Length: 530
Image (cartoon, rainbow, N blue to C red):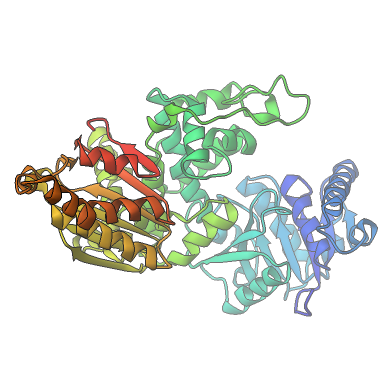
């Protein structure tokens, strides 16, 4: 731990989040006062911390002995023991009046220059700060469960949070080696919960439309690369927790509708792992076990971009309203939720115009304002900032476009798209196409940024085969041989020897020579009408 202004910390609440936060602080060298209502709760918390530390030690993730780390944590049921701490982190039950009462009591005891923070995930920071005489020394510090494994925190500024207070909190966050974002405004759900809510609510709606939860989860795990599907994650977090959070956010102005199915599950106490049944059945597991989710052809019936589009729309609102930056959105979802890329990068890859189309379609289907594309997205489409395919979207990308013979070569940051461009002739292969394809493949192969090459056709066909007009010029077998040696053989050789994956996207006809191009590809992706 680096020397700083914060040396002693009080963590109030020794439940799931509180004991995890106390453990993180102790691992990083801080002396911790862990406060709760009873000695029994505190003993249980210490046992869980010891169990966690044993696991970390077994994997070589802590440098000090378990006893040394535990020696930094002192448990107590008395708030008086927190009177000389530098920082308070509140992590009691998610009820505003309970939290306010905690802060009123602490405010009367803890020295006046100490900083107060709350781990709330839904309650406005300024509302809680109003219970104290130090709103300028009050901020949100929202850890993600389990904090010992997910080293990310949201720092939320209240209406009266001072710059000095914010600097002290950020210094502490850096000392515990956590990644962080700073929310400039106190909005319902902050950042992570707002984005998660859009993701989870859309997934639940897709389930209610008839999609199987295993197919939805498999699509997210195996097509999007998420560590868990939504329904696995909801069962892990707790249906009760999610239902409560959604309701609290909606009460405070978050524009969304809660599923009746989710409400029913909450009322029936089908809360996930903690009750043995949620979206999945855990009754057969003696200890926690993940449901078996395997990829199948069914995952391609799911459009996972519907969920991404809902998240992107919310992220655009947050960025446009200067609550967080684009980079903070990306960091939050990759560090906290373990997404392989942030939602705005997804938007740039999908195409901002395609995201807007998905949202407009959902708005037409439902009439719900939450699907109206954010003005930021609409302005980006109007300005042609569509993402990778135009070189700029939310971020700038390496992009170039050239006409190569009768083909179009596009470099889209880390891959190339080669399009046969004779739509009026159904992309029939003539000399200009054969030669253009070869030169385009050579260009892709020479570019170190290009990791894969995609070959497709413009218009309503992939390629209708060799051009009859070209073939009609052949008078003898010698003409055929000369043509093959000059045009066909060099392209075929280049396709066979290409050191980068070659993927064909087939729409419409693929006859003769067009079929041969697909045979030479590594992967063929065909549309339903191919």
